[in-house]
Image (tube, rainbow, N blue to C red; front, side, top):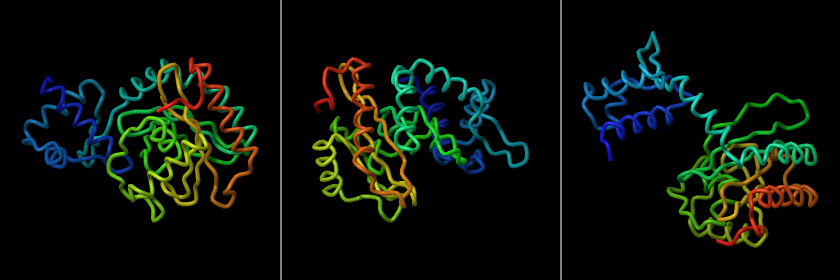
Length: 247
């Protein structure tokens, strides 16, 4: 491992975790990296020179830079899961009336690589690029159920987040039996989710799911069937011989 590269990547990870805030000061970055401020200053100035980090003129705090968005767009453009899913997610939104998310399996999380808005014309936040915890979301549970991946720390996001390992294991058993995973206000208050795994020729690589307002939960059987059908169709297009994939 090249130490300087590792430190730079860790610095970007800290800034990523601070999204939604006003960035991080040099002292905060140094504390998070457990390095001397002078060392961290050299790291962030190098990242800044390449547009990966920007510095706020008033506060002096550092934030992620625009070049990362370009890299992210290149990644999305080469992701077969996304390209194969776009048409079917639009159809699923039309059939169900709910917003649709496509999540790609990443290290310990699931990343939203496509977001089809709810087709009622309501104002909605773009979600592409957001990462979601595995244990508290329907997309994440669909991945966990069919990969055997460890969920990591079961941190609480709302009062309804499942943080008991035995309770989560029970939910994953149900997901394997149904081919569907669910969550009820575990990640965001007022939102429930239903998701099914997507496989390629080798393994589960992500999931497709709908976002359901709590007032409209639970969903009717035709909605459940539509989510299953979308996941099955996308998986077959990606080369899966069966659906859902065996663990």
